[in-house]
Image 1 (spheres, rainbow, N blue to C red):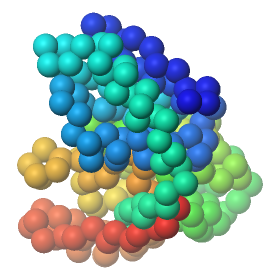
Image 2 (tube, rainbow, N blue to C red):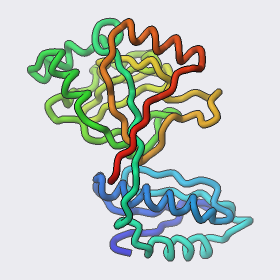
Image 3 (cartoon, rainbow, N blue to C red):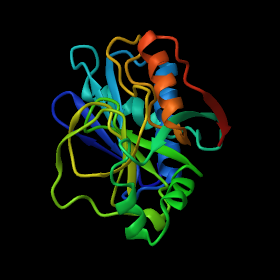
Amino acid sequence: MENIKILTAGDSSILIEFGKEISPEINGRITAVVHLMKEQHIEGVVEVIPAFASLLVNYDPRVITYSQIKERMEKLLKLDVRSEKSARRIFEIPVCYGGEYGPDLENIAANAGLTPEEVIQIHSSRDYLIYMLGFLPGFAYLGGLDERIHTPRLANPRIRIRAGSVGIGGSQTGIYPLDSPGGWQLLGLTPINPYDPQREIPILYEAGDYIRFVPITGEEYREIRAQVEAGTYQCVIHRKEV
């Protein structure tokens, strides 16, 4: 099983370590295993939680023992799921950049020695892989931010960051799904809700999906926001073969 390790994590969880580094290859392996586990419906498995380079499997010890779940996972991990091509989802996230929507855009541009327009172009020019979800419900840890716009976190974090704010913190970018404190520098705001407890599936996307930021105007922001509040907005989703 290569360098994969299966470790105990309390009395009802196991941790599967796929490596030590953050990479699309390891993420692809984890995503494939998660999908395979969902297909097999292993009795006693309560939840699977992917992270950057590991997978936490929570199970019910009244239904399946540690030895049994470990044996099942060892067999599953021997399957060559890496060679299978799969279609990943790409979620288009509309973002209104700068001004009242992105109060730190000028700071980000100055730090990078670029114009605000160049920062927007760079930030919205690629698809970002979701490595994991955490911190807040629906908060996606994204990979692939262009080094040119890496930006230090604020020296004094904000007490409240508006839900939907798109920010940069060091080498990462992401969306705040709820109002919360935070120290990332804000370059824009999305009118959609990455997390909505009233939806059938509250979190819009999952680990292994991609996010594509799409610049919009203030008028478009207000139009989309009205659709979101009316429950008529449909997020644009593409498929990507990997």
